[in-house]
Amino acid sequence: MPSSDRLPWPAEWPHHSGRRYWPGIVLLALFGLVAFGAGLGFVAIGVPGGVKYGLLAALMFMFGAFAMYYTRVRRPAGYTDVRSDHPATEMRYSLVAFVCLVGLMCCATAIFVLAAVDYWRGGTTAAALVFGVLGLGTATFVVAVLTGRVRRGRLTLSAAGIEQRGWTFSSFLPWEAFAGVKATYNGRPEVLVIAYANAEWRKQQFTRLWKIDRLPPVPMIEVDCAQFAVPPEGLYALLKHYIEHPEARVELGTDAVLTRLSG
Image (cartoon, rainbow, N blue to C red; front, top):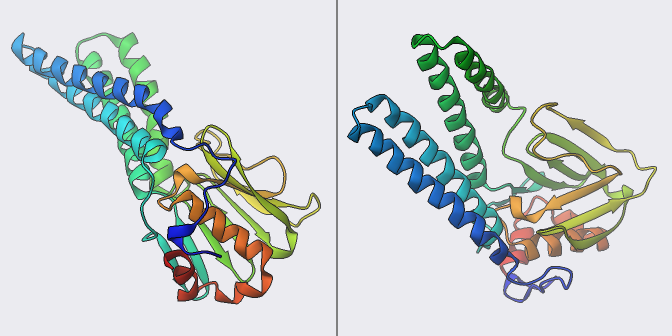
């Protein structure tokens, strides 16, 4: 496997594919600025109680804009989120993306709950109930994070096989179950580590409501490279190498993996 400065970019992945997301990023940022301005406007017209909604909405839009930039446009520059300690090598999902998602949902929950309280105090019961229900709905996401059902994911390579802990699911397949690996493009770079149809597949979906990501329909490890804080070509090269070279798997959990990536 070549070192990181010479890792090939798979032909299946278009170059500069992140450009298509810039209009959405700019639009979200503009919404955030408008919301911030609206919050200040409430002060100007003598309604200071509306400031909190403007500021929370602005923060929510900014979280969304930054998450889209970080996962869809920015390309990770290094392998600091690859850990290779006995007995496994672990590649973590992006911490920034996770924080942005949780922050966005916390802002939405706060907006709905505060609106429900304000409407209730103002005697508008119907609106209070509507916003209360919305607040309870988004609060279930926060609870799922606090209980660990939604969490920052990881991809773990060990002597036993490959384990993927996504945002909301876990999946494990032993090495002998895999038939091959290929790069695909589904709006963003992906790596499919394909298993045989009769493979022994250990899997679990942790949430019913907040299925941010889903288990694939057939036995495989489906890696959405945009979710990782690791260069996608490095993910592909590492998975391909250890699928095609069983004898090299003794390196997993050692510094040899990092050496392969860093050259």
